[in-house]
Length: 446
Image (tube, rainbow, N blue to C red):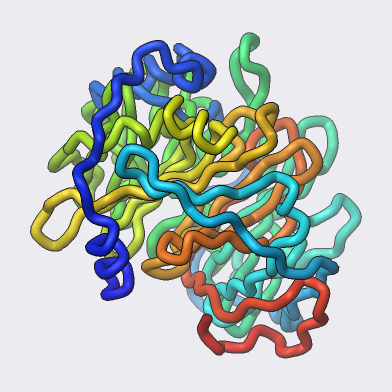
């Protein structure tokens, strides 16, 4: 934990008020099916991840010997056109500090430069159908690490995965021999979700869940490996915290997959990707902790005002956990908004720290699951995806300052997230969106 965060929490310390959330409209709106799925997995229900799938026609593993490298031009962040505006002061509701993010101010937020291993992310993270992108294919790889994952729409429900690669490469590469196809239930429609944990901790391997298999891509040599899973109903998955296993979930089963070998092991339902998960049953909210292999090691109850969590939980290096959420009625009524992001954490002694939330206000008809946690770029700043009626944005939230930034525009889609972040990310400098930036991504810190 940083000294700045500890000081803030100490200054604001008081008892957390436990509030009865029975009859929560936000909980009901999250959906009974999502609650049931997490109840089976962790024995605590909450809002779950959306259905994901990929269909692929590719060869199996390729040698990394004498791998040719892709030579990409340097990427310079493109300027945008909005100036900075003030953000409302936070409120304290039942022991939770609440930052307000008015929908009317989204277009006027200051822009934050985020780099992937020194290469700045473009302010428009998208690849159009006719864009020319270097191919990542058999025996052709790159020395950089994956900073972001998105897809190119080929039409007819077919997509290619595209990686923004950091380091000296600094640009997009496309896995042209992998074709992704969304799938889902007749009731909920087709979805394609690229979750927060699909990039391995080493930054080189990416795992995509398909209905009945998991596809692994290694950007170092462009190799692709497909591992069959004994089910036709996989929904989501991601890497364990150590990157040793890929963990895949169906609605009722969980598997551990060895990405380098043939091993596919049935796992307990509460095995999970990443180090933490925030989940709720509508009355209580729990923070579960997992070891490096994905096995649960502890669970504690936290403030019910954090509401029902949505999709993935992401953990900072110091153990702070952020997740998208549907807020509890006490917070919703105080700020006129019921979707946002929340964070909780443990200190070095294992005791509970005060939570904080950011809530989108003035837009009660925002799409369900508008906030999705993606990755921390420092101990204080977490990146998230914000979907509105007019745009989808990559945003940043400082949990100490209570401040939000614009980072990049993302593709708008009806097929799920279609975007994920990798590793090696760092927030480097903030700039007014109306001012061109010719620095090429300065390493000056905020």
